[in-house]
Image (tube, rainbow, N blue to C red; front, side):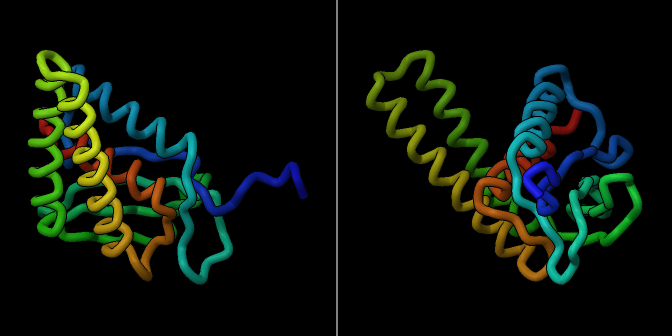
Length: 160
């Protein structure tokens, strides 16, 4: 039993380049890091389905975030589409606070940097909670996985 791989997890995350587009090298690097972080440590499952591990394909279709859940071998299981509208404010606010954080790193005091970083983490947590709420009944993720997926959603909002 100990050698059996954990079933409630993602083993792959891919992005639909046709709908998301390519970014500049920095954006592509951010996306690659976000995907690596998700795959490295996650908890992901479908309610009432004893399958897994899973592969996740993410696309943007008609201004909706599309999660295509597949088996590890790529067979389709389910597709869920989420409106991006509830995430727009979180993405905008997170971008503003990240900009402030990076500016503070260049010229702020350690206490300013720490205060902004605490706000940034708080905003990230709120966005993760929103994502968990929007996925409720569709996809089961733990808080850390929701944070990592929001990081990827944030990285996706940059279009090349």
